[in-house]
Amino acid sequence: MPHPVFQPGAVAVVTGGAAGIGLAAVQAFARLGLAVVIADVSDEHLAAAEAAVHAECPDATIVTRVIDVSRREDLEALEAEVRQRFGGTDVLMNNAGVQPGSHMFAPQANWERILGVNLWGVIHGCHVFVPPMIARGRPGLVINTGSKQGITTPPGDPAYNVSKTGVKTFTELLAHELRTTDNCAVTAHLLIPGFVFTALTARGRTEKPAGAWTPEQTIASMMTHLDRGDFYILCPDNEVTRTLDERRILWAAGDLIENRPALSRWHPDFAEAFAAFVKAGEAD
Image (cartoon, rainbow, N blue to C red):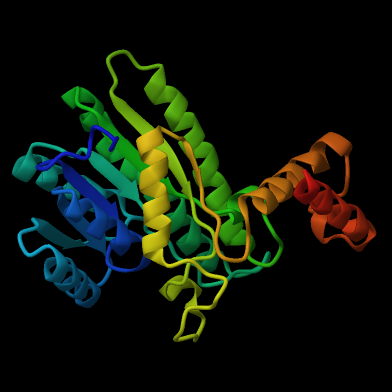
């Protein structure tokens, strides 16, 4: 059964909704009859996204707005407009994200931009939109887009990993806050995509790699998880199975429990042990 929030006339707000996973979510919501507010940083991309949605759903109600999610005032203005026009928000998807690359001692501006969009964008979105959603007394969904890099924290892009680790922790705490709030019908969910072929991951490629999922596959998986009421929406892809994801996550947690070196999965002294650990999981 579809989640009860997905009813014709409900309203969804999707940040980073002009392309990739965000646009696939917008299209899925529009097919279900929701009015959708697409927020992104580019007028050009927003116009293309609106045209793409109307090509499939000509009667869909689509509103586009240019905002920078790192600026709380942009989200405050958007929430007020949505409330005035539609009465409020039923689905909030904090999906906007950047991944320009980073290193540990990159200039502060590099870190500030990544954390400002990826982490503060989620915090701003929830702080601004969620209290009015609770006050409406209606079923509602908050979906925050995280990353597997925020769980296993592979070396190579520390600012991005830190931002997505923060999203995971924030969303877990939000879920607890919502379920312990009296008369609250709003729930929070953490979307954890696998390898998805988008502008963020293309890196010059024009064709989808065989190992990647499409944004549409990712959102189809997300909708199934939401219908089940799952908090963790852990998506596989064509390279990485659910089993492999689980072994990687367990190994990362084991670093603390076993007092191994940090990020021992990438430590040469533990390469054989990690490979054996993964193989044991596959055998199970």
